[in-house]
Length: 305
Image 1 (tube, rainbow, N blue to C red):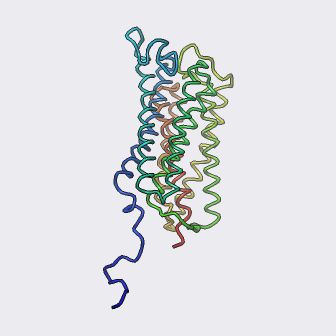
Image 2 (image 1 turned 135 degrees about the vertical axis):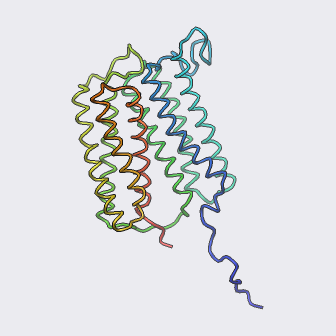
Image 3 (image 1 turned 45 degrees about the vertical axis):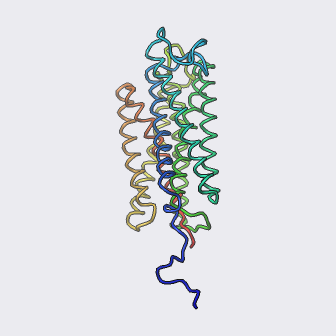
């Protein structure tokens, strides 16, 4: 009797999406959305001057874990942001458990899940330091940059859910890959100068907090230069990827959309006197630009199999 498989017998391993399952996929998306959402709530804390709404850490006051009736709405906003950190921690822990229990062969996913969980713990500590140091603008800026990094790691996790681990080969021309990496460096410079610009501007999180001492107007201009360069690179690479039907075309379209909107929001907020809502949108769009760039970099290569 022949041992050859019948035509209906699958001879290839299951796809990563089928292998992963719905529960982990949903949890991963919840993690990504919450990572972006906490940037919005953190921005709300700063933009409503609620940074010291809970004047102590880890409790809200010296005698209470939660806001008391004697405190103002600033306390509710600040405490709500702290609760978002707790929610993120729970979701991250669930993902770690799901990967460990059901997908032990996916060491890449387990490492990413642990990275997100560890990053949330670090963020909680840095959040405490920001309160203890009276909202030091450099600590607040670091807090934001790490949040953006965690958004990117959550995006990597989502991408890896669909990809089986193994050797990969370049799926785009080498020059295209180099320009993409250059664009990612320009984005990083934009984020850093954006952080410094915000630290020099009026939105300190509390009326009595000192700023970083830099010239906010000068930094605003310096911050815009790499932003325009990024927009030019993204549009050029998007056009080429669409014409040549490269696997990164879809994500370049997303990046261009985010960056173009970001440029217009940046111009508007600078001319309108930095309205809080526009600044908050600017913060979130920067994180989405970083996530889109991360997805582009991941799609520069394809599996060799």
